[in-house]
Length: 268
Ligand code: KIV
Image (cartoon, rainbow, N blue to C red; front, side, top):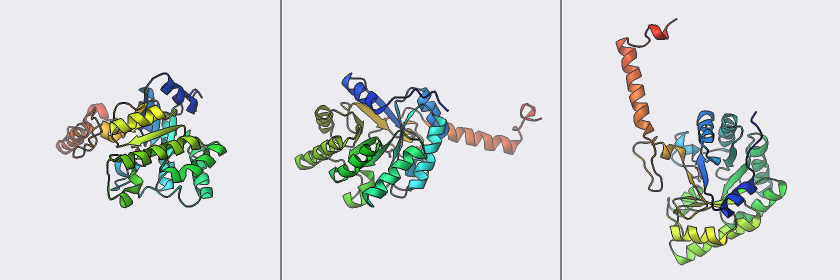
């Protein structure tokens, strides 16, 4: 399986130092993971956006550890040489440090991920430190935290006031000090993301955080135009896959009904 030639966490820090932008994309299954890796995506994130993108949930809160691991393992099988990060779902880091560590370890041992991502503020820094100490690379995630929508009152741009911006800065620095190798910055003013990127030595991956981050991350299904009725402001649609799929499904149904498929070509 694979050639064994894949980047390590130090590679991404070097990319930041050299001013080379890091490209991260979510992936949830083997075939699209293979395509993304083939196209030079630097990091595949098996985000808990899995819940909405693939599993049909209304939010990320319903995603379980087992579901996440199942999809991480599929992504790894599809892209053996990619740098794959498993996104730890809601509550998997909050029921005690021991549980958090054991849950994180499953991403490396069972799903063969290279790292885990954890959403949260400075309160999680000791947990991150224990993970890193145990040999588990951790990517932090600050700003808008989709796992906190119930307490935050919905999906809100974070860091718009001086007070909340300073809080995000403190959270980000706590994550860096705890040993996180990189940080996702989600939905915050571009100027704040720029300040964070300048003040931290670890790379920042922005989503709705402007152009000054060390790299960008997007949800694959937003980028491909999978959901015709839903276009988040921070996402650019590079393809209209829902139209392509609709056309193919409609033609298939028509051809079965009118007898055009299967033709001789598809028969034995
Ligand atoms: O779950 C996810 O896909 C994420 C990215 C949006 C960063 O956390």
